[in-house]
Image (cartoon, rainbow, N blue to C red; front, top):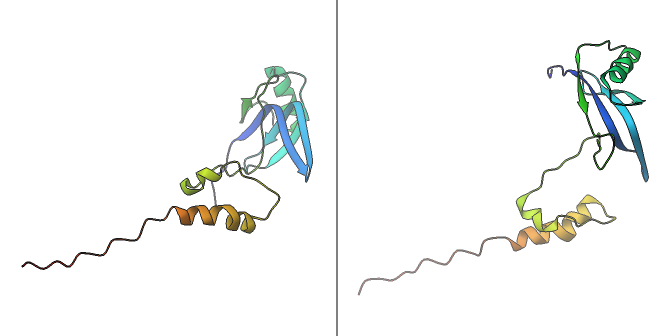
Length: 134
């Protein structure tokens, strides 16, 4: 069983996609994540003062201790994007970065990745010369 995490309150602007084709932007919000890493609370926030955050934590039943506060920018081009986001890339797929389309993963792999990876193969080894001393 994985170790418990510490409760965390994230504040700022949040982007979410609650359904296919729907983008939700929550400005001036706080998100409460529990010890299991589950989002338990989403609430609007008047400001990012400690008093406002503590008052919200009290409403959530979290009290004033036992959690971490992670502050994001309220204004500007910063936001939180909760969710599982796989950001790794395989070196052989680097040239395909940014290629997207309306296709399935297998079709994308067959169209772009597999041909690219096969083009990166090493040339066949040269046959050993069989010279005999004269």
